[in-house]
Length: 138
Image (cartoon, rainbow, N blue to C red; front, side, top):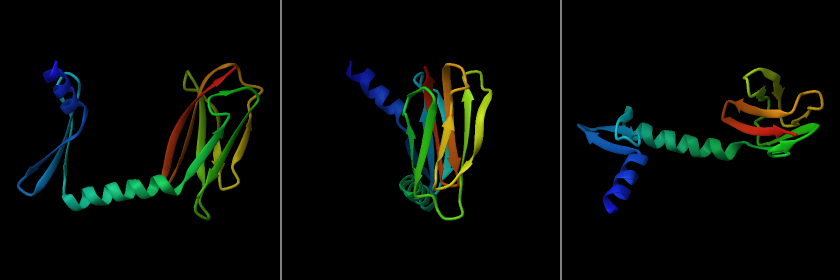
């Protein structure tokens, strides 16, 4: 049993290997096959981790109601830089776009009374932010 757990831990996490002053990142799936390989130098790896950490703390977006909605969805952003906007696309389960547009620090309010019940994906993206929300209209 310990061998199986140990193998799962190795397969589920990225593996860094250094070869002649280059770092290679490998990822493996559950069957043990390599699914991802990239050559990364240490400076680039450090910059990318710092950049991701900085970007995650810059912009925050609140979507209300968070999962189940009826007639309205309110999107309230915080931390968007001046003269910068976020774009949004709301699509149904078939992939058809229902709403799309842009907004800044003021946020948006979408009237959803005219759309049918079902599952929707709201994707909000910008220069340093991207997040998708799964929503259900009842």
